[in-house]
Length: 553
Image 1 (spheres, helix red, strand yellow):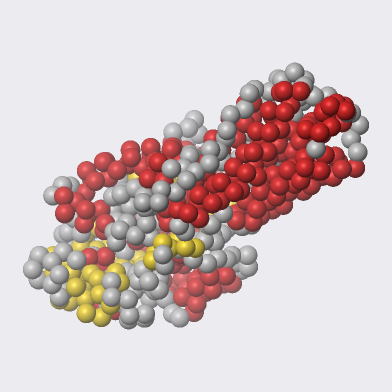
Image 2: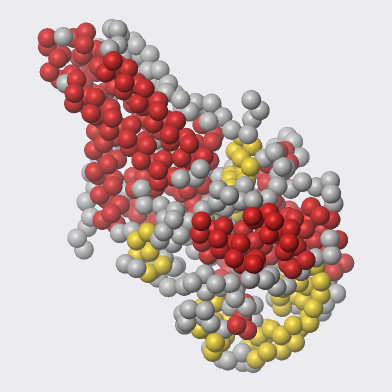
């Protein structure tokens, strides 16, 4: 069987702040779980993302601090890298959109779309701040959403109803720079002619049968409602420059972030390959035989399920030898809410994810959040919810199983894995169940149903606990040491399987546990129950998951 190449494309966070729990649950933990499974299963994974250096929040933060936008990115990028390391989010490359490589790849896409007749110039009305004497990018304009009436909708999208907007759609628009009512003035820009690719895009979307309903229904509905040309440049001084031969529309224009940020998935793959001994290695993840999964929040559905596929279709059209693959899936999550409000750093709703590490270990947090992933519906999460999962499920069902089996084995069998006698039907039934749980978990992760997957891992641990309770090795050890040794051997095999089942969710503790069992790290091609070999010394276990308490304050 040939190796599957899996591109795990992760939403690009703005390089102006660290991520809150909503970001972690919605866009960063899910791809890491998915990628870890595929690596263990023996597939070739490339997981990439980076800091969005050109988003409007960067320039807003720079204006507030009186610094250049690049300094905001340079400050936050290393903090982001440290954040991912602490949380166990294992990127192959986490870069920025501020690189020369990203500029060159963006230009290549611009030129390809222009060659395909899909980039055209157009004079348009754009909002202008009369007090600041400058044109306003989309996110520098806020107002009331014409769809849902939300009073703080942005000029490109409403955070409340996720409608894609144009600044001129807003009711009672206001400049975020001065609060002034902006004026419409004419300016010339490059546009992508989305109507020119609409039929091809619609046909492709109709073939996406396995996508989450809220993703595919939104994308198909958006296309059916009629695509419009969309500006891909703006009057800006910060951003990717326009390719020199097309920089003919006047001074002070840049490629707008909504166009170039998604190109980062391709540019990051190329940057990763440039750091290997094969600069063309990126192509293995960017062809029709490869698979690509885009992990984003639902507010990013239009960019990843409509706009980005449009670019790729148009770019491939310009050169029929190109076969850059379109998304295999866009498993966009719904929102995490806190007491009913959507998490938002700018509005102070939700806690920074690293702050939770003052209470939780990274594995406790990862597991507890995985149990609440907002895959199909918004999920309201409290710290009490997370503590309950960490204590009642992770510590009790899994951690306690590990501790009592390893402790009993060391105490009664010379600190080593016992030699089993012949297995009976009950023994074989447990081993069959844990292997079935592993297979079911794999199927769930393949379908990006991660909440179901974590349930299978828990089910494995619970099955092993039920087996122990039925066999009662603490009772049989006096009268039937052979039966006791067999029971503990079977339980250790189940725990060995558990190290695989829990590895995508709790990687740090799994590495520790496998060391205690003499198994070594989980290896590629290892999505199967490993044998915990009789006679192997077992290290003295410690408490993997200490019980947590919520501070009543």
